[in-house]
Length: 289
Length: 257
Image (cartoon, rainbow over all chains, first blue to last red):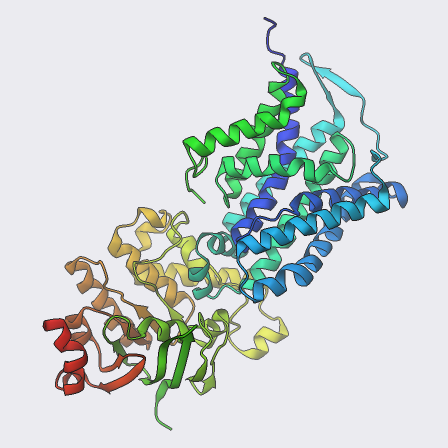
């Protein structure tokens, strides 16, 4: 038996913090719009490609490209909401029909991206990939930046949700829609802000994941089920749960590599999810949302 | 013109083949406490939901303060000055009492049209005003010590007061109370009655109450409308209603039988 290598834990924190960001977006949209958005993975992919276009195709500095990916992805998410989800919502279509619609949207977006950029693995043009060794753990400057950016965004989301009327109204809408409406919350206004924040976070997650691995059309879809696992682990609709769940799933997946083949990473996420659903279906935080 | 704050005329609402409201009329006078009663299934809840914007009526008119709000979306009804509470003291359970009050308090209700359109009230000014208003209301409702407690940690009576405070946060003119006394112990009911009377007097509010507790309704209301099978069958003072034969037959008789 070899002793446990802390490298796996560090990898887990890096992967987990990016999953957490995307999972917050997914859970916020679920909470406020009351449907599971299967196209959420593609929003992550769109963010990564938007930054790729700005960075590699247009030759902009990476940081500028990463920041530009946010408004581009948000604009696409809002346009898709207006064209696809809003008309259905107005007719009072339920969560299941919206979910099926989003499955279709996911395929259209994924294949659209593949048509334009092919299924090749793409990379950003950026330096800082040389790893340094700290206490026996290899880590790159880029990876440190990934964790820092994720943590800063999580703190920002916390402040938004607890210190602003907008954030409080979002939590309220997720908690009890009719009561929130009776308090004067403008439902469509909150929906718009939820897309802005959810898609914005997911775009950043896409850029960070593209930075840590590669950019490809299926990157978001491949992570969708892991994001679901994170959301369920944390309690559906609970943004803090999604943060915890994302980190926990990321760490569990990477640490599992120390014991079993890395091909089983997704299986680890699902085993955790299934066990949790059986044992504590309301999520780790137990209905704190 | 009368001093009617709310006028509901010939309201109809169908669900599939079922007629829930079938030509309902009612008037709520300004600064009154008006009761809406009727046997189970008479359509009281549907009337409430239609006035507050949860349902679109199939026919009829809801006029509030001279403004036609028939079929307006909920937040516009709230902006017009009508808010409602729910049965069983609905709150946002995992949020603090203070946060419960801040929900929805941004940029929806500029004091005047010019202030709202000229953008003279910035986002943060809005928030500051909301925070100040919330703290005033907490004190008014005697909830200031629970300010930072989670709503689900409150006792049932405090939750009811929080719900009324939340309604007052929207700066309404008319508050619809949906069975405010349901499930409350007797001493809490007394408290809530006192608060309703106090709020009417000190804050110039009008109340429309659906309630099954006849003693409370008769004691609290200035005016009562009775509905049965989707229509208005009587309206008047508690005294008139108590002595109205149609009402006794349709409703009170059934209760005491």
